[in-house]
Length: 500
Image 1 (spheres, helix red, strand yellow):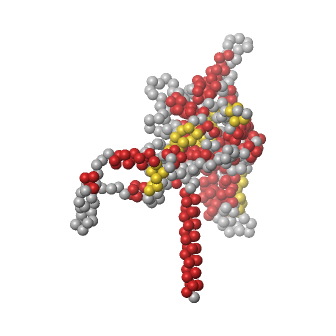
Image 2 (cartoon, rainbow, N blue to C red; image 1 turned 90 degrees about the vertical axis):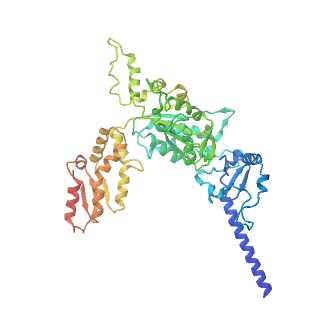
Image 3 (cartoon, rainbow, N blue to C red; image 1 turned 90 degrees about the horizontal axis):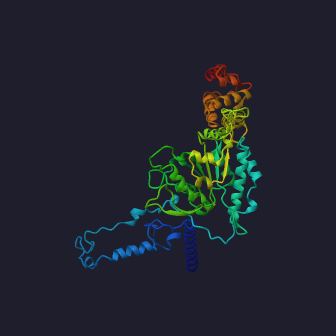
């Protein structure tokens, strides 16, 4: 019996040891995806080299360790070491008078560096491309996917599909017969609310690549208050979960790019205009930049990662107000006197005047030639017409009307819109002149009372929005469920509160 107990105990100890070992291995594997960062200089292991690992998850690189030891060796501690211990006389105390030691655990904490500031290790590649050319969607399939979400803008969708397809072929191959393919950065010009940002968001979702959307209005020259130019790459790194390799194949969309144009007739330093354009040149063309991890600005307590922007696709977009006037001035230079003369107001009523834009017009607007030269693909988006507004309301997969229909469907109520009501909404949106953004605001206004009153009465089965309701001359049509006309007074309350 004693032998059996001994064997059982030995087996239990062996199993416990294996369990602890597996837990330790699991923890090591979970941390093996991230690089160690030096506690002093904040450089990752890939740049600083092998780390000295101290208690409380503290790592120090070889350089910082040697500098620390050199600094310590400059002082003579011989006399200090010979000092008698101070204390209560029982041998306890400290042999270093007037010197207090810092507890590194208080500085670092038990949890170490937060995950948002950890850099993922680069995977060992065997030379094969991670993006397979055969799996890249061809342009016609990319455009077909965009058609499901974006109404109109046929030319813009075609240009973007081809540019993205060529770009990721370039990323997958690198070089073809020693011929290096250049980047296909894009500049999209269109009035506000025409779908510039929505196009890029949809494109990134379809391609399953990290996307960073930055606003050029907050960018300033290095050394001034505001975001540095490298902050756009830092946002992309955060979108890729600090995976540098994945971020180097992502997309950066810089909105409001027209706000960094050169200021005209000014003698002050242009820290948020031409200087920002000059600082962005290296990013657009391709360069290795050091960006802070998990922060917008560089400081001593933030680790830095090196990102190569050679394979990052940059898409710049802006409304470019007053660009139409510059185009008209160029076109009106051909006006003269005589029977064949063109009238000066010939182009005033042309809706898509932006489609006639040239590089010279963009230069005159205030963009420097070096900046435009790094955006080889320039295309424009059309302003939205009334017919396009109606289509935007009902056709896309996540159309605004479908969203409200889904919300009321959860209350078991069917929501319908008459064609006249859609046209009335589009007409009101055209008056606001803010593009598709006006549609949501208008529908929110008219759906407020309906969304408030419908959950009160379980007998309501269907609500139909009419043109009279949108124009304020009537109310919506409300149908009660069959065999449940128990509260006719509530129906009158809904109709009177919904009418305007």
